[in-house]
Image (tube, rainbow, N blue to C red):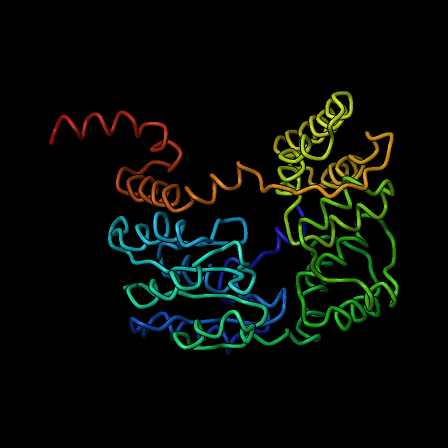
Length: 371
């Protein structure tokens, strides 16, 4: 497991350097008034998405989350999001609607902003939007229906303290001066600072000042795919994976979805899928042994995908999002409700959630016969 996932905060107390913002978000949720949404904006890695997720969990509210992998057209919002908002949660525990990266909506998301404004007007539940830039011209109308909250960059001293804590727990031998430099150059982005620490722990490479100054902190998945498919320098491709805001497993599925778009020769396609199958074997090994260091080998394999091609491809390729992730995104609300239902039944029957999940088909038959 990557350090970023392993040390992802689970409670409000574990959030670093955002106590004031946390209180303001809590106040908006607890004193919600229909007709207004909360637009949270700020730099990458400051907790814009994470804070609402943790609040929903701690308040035992259902979180309906629309992220960058979802389709955000007017039709999608009408047919999927709106019914989910209007439906009653199991056990009436309430909901929080989180629409992530609202400023990334493009001209292809036709009518999306207008439909979101309608949702804000009609919703009985708090709606939280996130953006890097709240003053993007495309959000002009939307801002009229939002309270704005800027999430400030995390103080370098807070980041330094967190990195030292992680290094101690993971037995990473690293000088305090290097941790201080990583913290200072992270530009308030805790996630990138943790990634830098992990790079040192895995490769032993010391990240020099110029690397920290010049490196982009977040890269678009389409740029990552272009690098992986068309750049034959594995070292550069490893760096592209590390810079990506996607998890390694998500990158795996993006590659799988687009192999036949990128490669046209059957032998090249076969070799590419062979590389993915080897990476999948490592995934299975990680699940069985919990030896998370093998993520490094998976990244190496994915970085070599371009080597299956003999001739360089200079043609433009339109990459498609993985159908698997789209389906998971669209069914996230239903799966979450089912998960919560099984958890609550398990508490009543004094057994595990997984056991209820196994017995659910039989419980449905029993309940139908008794109605």
